[in-house]
Amino acid sequence: MSNILVIEDESSMREFMVTMLELEGYNVDSAPDGAVGMDLFEKERYDLVITDMIMPEKDGSEVCKELMEYEPAPEIIALSAAHPHILEQVMNLGVDISFEKPFDVVDFLKSVNSKLNSKHSNPN
Image (cartoon, rainbow, N blue to C red; front, side, top):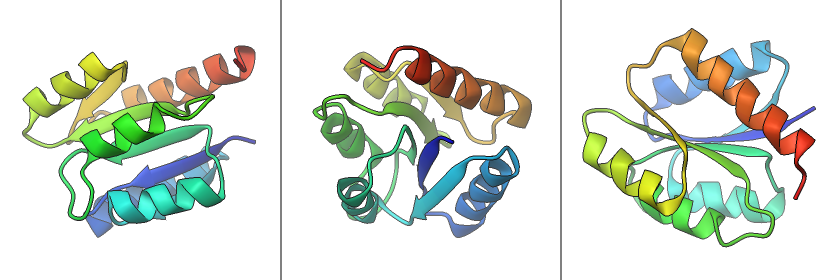
């Protein structure tokens, strides 16, 4: 079973994503900001990290940069509400899936499944 970390400062959105992903059968942990999220990632590596971009303590761009330094790096999905230029910046870093909030749940879950399936079929 895949392990997912959700990093989102808005509690209602964080709880929604955790519940939605758990209903899909994933193991999900969550963090209210990038600093806590990276602490969790240090303790338990995750197959997929879903991170908001605008957060206190450590923003999503910093989180993405740090995660990409790991070998192997986790799959990453970036989220932002009303800041498409930030999503473009992380796409330039190598994050290949991003969503503007609010997002379509069906499309989001398809992307999660796709990222995790590609990770498990390509473990390197």
